[in-house]
Image 1 (cartoon, rainbow, N blue to C red):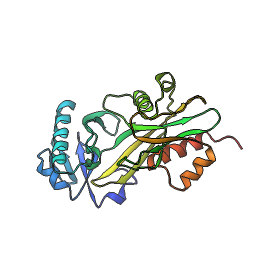
Image 2: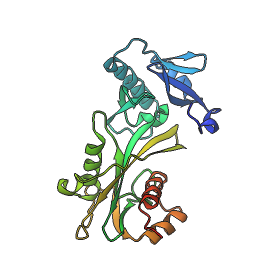
Image 3: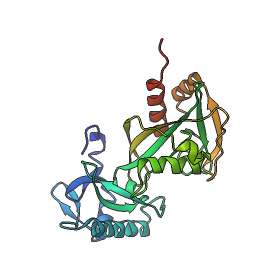
Image 4: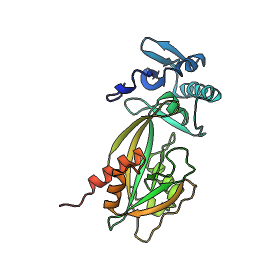
Amino acid sequence: MAAGDAEFSAQYLPLSIAGEPLGRVRRDIAPAVLESGAAEAVADGLALRDRGFTLARRSRLLQSLAVQLRNRGLIADWRNELCAVLDAGGNEVARCERGAFRTLGIQNRAVHVNGHRADGRVWVARRSQLKRADPGMLDNVAAGGVSAGESLRSAAMRELWEEAGVPRSIASRVEFPGVYLRSVRETRFGLHDERVIVADVLLPESFVPLGRDGEVEHFICMRRDEIEAALARGEFTVEAGLSMRDFLDRTRPPA
């Protein structure tokens, strides 16, 4: 279990995948995981029955576990989207339904794009009130999970188009400053463990974002001091707040 996760150790059991503790399952959900037949009890928690499996075979086993958990009502939001399960070295060891990552406590990856202008303002999204997670809160101009087999750049460009209508000619300028943050919090059925991959894109002052997928209520072009105040009031989602704070700190004008 990673450093800083001790607060969850009493309520969760480690789940080994490909021989590494890559997930954490809430103790009251552990019986359902065992009854699926896809995992077994071991000395320090649970382990997927995947010894000697190829990536494809392990993925099928993990996906079968996800389906059984969904059938028991233990997955809150089934996405029909596969995401990669990475080991400690960043190597892909399996693929699984994105919606199962929280129930199984597997770390997911998401890109969070700070859409800024040359005049220092930053475009911020107000999430739709219909969103299941964090409705009405402030968010990055675009953000979303990285699908299995998708590069970080492709994921950022896809989200920029889907969520903010940023054309490829502009989205292709997205930059990755090499900042990787982490957010771990409890949800209805398990842990939301997200690796927040920060990205920046310079948007022309003539460009106005336009949501295309219904996930954004509207966009706001905010000054740095307005963002600082909104952060202090807790108006941003946890992950967007981390990304935005990093951006403000990295791009702070010299005194």
